[in-house]
Length: 414
Ligand SMILES: Cc1cc2nc3c(=O)[nH]c(=O)nc-3n(C[C@H](O)[C@H](O)[C@H](O)COP(=O)(O)OP(=O)(O)OC[C@H]3O[C@@H](n4cnc5c(N)ncnc54)[C@H](O)[C@@H]3O)c2cc1C
Image (cartoon, rainbow, N blue to C red; front, top):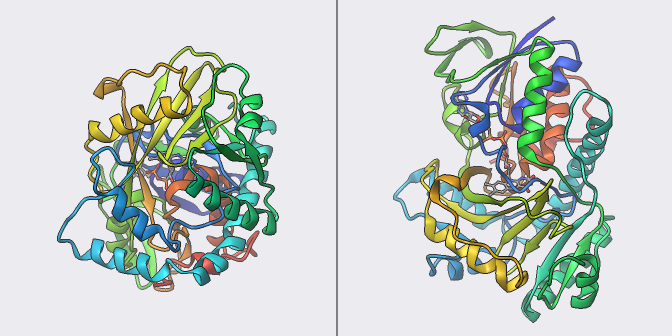
């Protein structure tokens, strides 16, 4: 039995631990903080096979420039004289092309559909306890510009085999009988689903601990010992740990971890915020993205979670309440009857989406190392893609035939 050390206890690290354990490995997960603090905990909880178009797409740069002018806008790049940010921006620009979008659609679709199938299995196989809801996803819009963009997106999705239905305002209202929805229309993706990510993460941790997987919190990985292309020890301030294989699932911090092994990963943290409206019952039934505002609403049990913004900010974790105000102000434009007060700063959650420049994750071995798998860079879809990534990691580490072709996700692709 090989001992695999996983650096990072977010959804990707924990799903990797789950499938590695299932395939008979001894597993230790290292996290620099407590598991409940990461990006995987307070996100919008959407499982999105609908998201087949990568963030690097034509028109995105112009849109981003317009949004950057407003302090409450949903997108922002913190200006910094930083070589890594400049390289990331250049790679993003190079990949924002129709050709890249066309090549990415089938691979993102296959990865998402694999993940959804694994989620469906996890929801019923008895290992975990979390609420799995298949009510789809609504992309709501108020403007004709968004309507045209969405009609095109729905066509692309349907052509790729992902069902998308264009609905008018009344049809959307009929889906939400308990609250008014003030929109021009929307797309309904019936194949999407949602979970409470915190509940899922807690359940994974509890299952793994019961099954002899070691979860070491507040245990930062500070380096590695290598023999040639083979990593033999993981270094931590509390002492080294001997390993036969390593998974780097450090989210937005992965480039710092990979650098210690001589691997360059281009990545930026895309900071976002969320907060909960408590005890509102099922006011909103179907998770929604409020398109022009780039904010989301997800029912979670008796509560409703709002989330949004993408600030390209490295690994800066400070909370900018102006951006949170932007989310708050946008909600009533779509749901006029929901009263949302500005949340107190200490009730706002923030997380860093690990954003690769081409919008595809990094999954696979670096060609310079024979027992290290990188599993990161999932951007806005890390929760959705967690199970599929974990399964692929468990296959790649032992060079088994993998569940799908992962050459597009090669960590050394730039
Ligand atoms: C506002 C918001 C809403 C979102 N909504 C959704 C959604 O609806 N659906 C979806 O699919 N995705 C969503 N996402 C994206 C998703 O949350 C992320 O893609 C995902 O959580 C990334 O998971 P991860 O495991 O790669 O990284 P993380 O969850 O960040 O985990 C990485 C872990 O590595 C640890 N680490 C880092 N360095 C070290 C080190 N040196 N030693 C030890 N540990 C280390 C960190 O402490 C961290 O816990 C959202 C994100 C945000 C911010």
